[in-house]
Amino acid sequence: MGVKHVMKKKRPDYVDVDIEAFYAETIGGAGGAPRGLERDLITKYFGNGDHVGRGDHDAALKALRAKMEEGTSFKGPDDGQGWIWLVADLNLKVGLDLELRKETPFGKRPVLVARQDNVAEVFDKVDWSVVRRRFNEVLGVRDMFNMFIKREKPTTTDDIIMANLQ
Image (tube, rainbow, N blue to C red):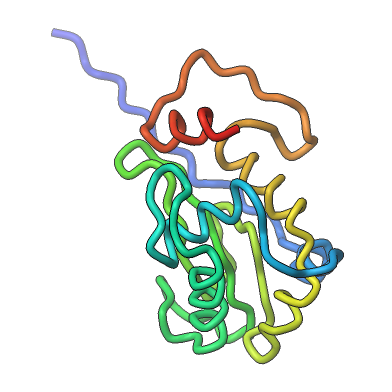
């Protein structure tokens, strides 16, 4: 009788995050309302949006901003550093998921960050093209070096929908 070889899972390897640099890149734009992919995803998760991008986009953006300013509707613990993150996660069970967090989002992909005491600054100066690039990294369209990622076929419903929207 053979003995089954059991491997220990490796613990994730985390690196220090330069939050100030991430924030500076986030607020390097002209603000305003998002367009395209980021607009539709914000509407889907913070408004009345559906899977094909329909919904009240302005109301959803206002709802996201209000939730970030209030700082009460978030997942996970509060690490006390004063940041609030919009993070994305792509997994096999639920597909794409967006959520607000008040801790450095290890294991998830941050797409937007704001100072809890000055959320208005991020919405006044956000660079939506940076946010879109970060969403594309999550969705597997481009990597962090802005290179196309080759994929065989979409793996989740959200992937199929996103592929059809582009």
